[in-house]
Structure formats: structure tokens, C-alpha cells
Figure 1: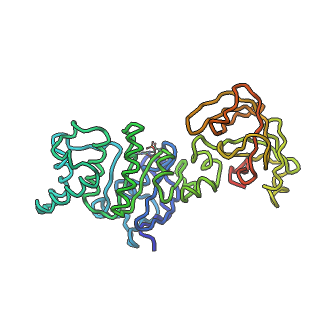
Figure 2 (figure 1 turned 45 degrees about the horizontal axis):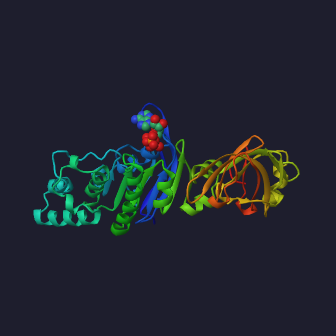
Length: 357
Ligand code: ATP
């Protein structure tokens, strides 16, 4: 039995807006789950239902096999870190960390031990006497995380905890949170709109769109086996390239290039004859020059040298795509190039349902 079960969870707000539809998910003890999706897809609403901060309109939420829909937030064994990590400004880091425990009437000696432990885990030992205003954004965020983990709860919920940090701090905190998760072993649900955070931190990712789960899987599964155009386009940076095209005798046109994809369509070829499909390939899955798979001629519009690779913006007779190449192979601007995509890196989607073929 899973540790947390969400069965057909729905959220309909009092104004009638249906924010979450039939959300089903089983979470094992100790898992790091990331909810990811664009703004407004229902990630925070789902997290808040788990936390007990929003009513569940329909469906069952179970903690360790016991229905928890009606349990108050305090009785769920949950700690939460929000986007805005409101620390008490007049209290030192020590007091901010100790506050929840002091309220519970726990012995001062035990509190001191716990605060020192958490401070050590989070690298805050040298800052315990400081006020929040004398800390960097990253340090403040660590105090907020510390306040949550000091309570030793089984379930840890985080809603965009890194969004107030700059890019460098985010990278550091990402690995710190993963590290804390390994040390504490708490079941963690983390909400973000940032696919890089999802890919780097999650055991499993839940991709959401407009209140519906699109796919649940490991970062590897979502990257290499996306179920639809949305997931394929959301996971990966730069995103997968897509071209809408019609199947004719097992072939499609991408720009002026006629590509034989019969081998990819397999026995579904007849089903898609004359139908529109979406042809997709990842920027990094290409080989410059004529190679195995399908070959495409394009002109180079722009190149961006990033150091470890170059992003090449190409025009395939009207279709725009991005290719990722070795910086030593960067083509000339305005030059004509040919590149190939191995069959295993070609993704085909139904033009109507946008589901993977
Ligand atoms: P973001 O990344 O912007 O926080 P999100 O995926 O977390 O987005 P939610 O905050 O869960 O999205 O909101 C989902 C949808 O529900 C949005 O369309 C939002 O406008 C709507 N919504 C949120 N709270 C309420 C409310 N109290 N009443 C009505 N609709 C709401």
C-alpha cells in the first residue's frame, strides 16, 4: 500500500471553477515527487488540498491507508515551505528555528539540540544569532526550510520555494534540498513551474496542464518517453522541435524534405495515411551531415555559442527549429546545412489528439 494515495481528487472552487480534475497518484514513503506545469495548471491547489489548506471537493486522500480528507492541517503530520518564506523579522535565526518547538512546550535543552542539528545540516551554524534582515535570500530560504524540517514530520510540502532566489542561488539550493531529502528521508512533494528543477530533483515528476495530469514518471521516462506533445515540449531545454505534417504513403514533408517514416509508423501506417501528424525531434538528437535515419536540409539563421554546446536556429523552408551541436562544429550564419535524425530519436504524435503514436 502506498504511503499517500490521491484517488480521483477534484477541486471545484466556490465560484464554480474546476481547478483539478480526477487527480490519481500513489506516493511511496520517502519519495521526492515534483508537480510541474505552467501557471494555473492546478499544482498549488493540489498541494494545498494535501496540506489541508483547501477542501477536497471530490475524491479520497489517504495517509498511510487512512482517509485524511477531514483531518485538519495540524493533524496530517505535514510541514510546508511556501514561496514567500515569512520569517519573524524581530527574531534571530535560532529563535525562528526554535519557535514551533517552543510553542509545543518542548524542553529548552532538547530544542537547543534540535536547532543546532538542523543548523548544521543547513549550514546555518554561524548565523544563529543574526536577524533575518542580515541574511542573504538563500540563507533566509534555508531558515524557512529548517523551520519545516525541525519538526521531524513524515511529509514535507514545498510550493515554489526557490522562486525568490537568483539563478545561482537556485542551483545551490536545489542540491541542498535534494541533500536534505536524502538525510531526512521525508516524503516530499515539491511544486514548481521550472522543468529543470523537476528534472534534477524528482524521483518522479507529475506533469499537469489545465487541471489534468498529463503524465507521471521518472525524469528519464518523461524525457525519452513523453506520452503527448505537451509533455514532450515542456520537458527539455531548448524544447523539442515540432512540425505538423501530413502522412502520404508512409512519408511526410518537413519543409521541402520528404522523409520516410514508415518504419516508425509500423503497422499504424494505414491508420495515419492522409492524416496530420506532429513530427518531433529534440535539438540534441541530431547529427550534422547526412547520416542514418531521416535527413533534412535547412538554412542557418542564428548561432548561439553557450560554451558546452551551440544552439543553432535553423529555417527548414519555413519551419523553425533549434539544433544543439558541438561548439567546434558550429555552422556559419546564413549557410545551408544538412542534418540527420536517427529513427529512434524521431517522435510522432497524432495531429488531432496530440498523443504519441
Ligand atoms: P501558479 O504556478 O501560477 O501558482 P498553479 O498551477 O499553482 O499556478 P493554482 O494556484 O493551483 O495553479 O490555480 C489553478 C487554477 O485555479 C487557476 O486557474 C486559478 O486562477 C484558479 N484558482 C486558484 N484559487 C482560486 C480560488 N480561490 N477561486 C477560484 N479559482 C481559483
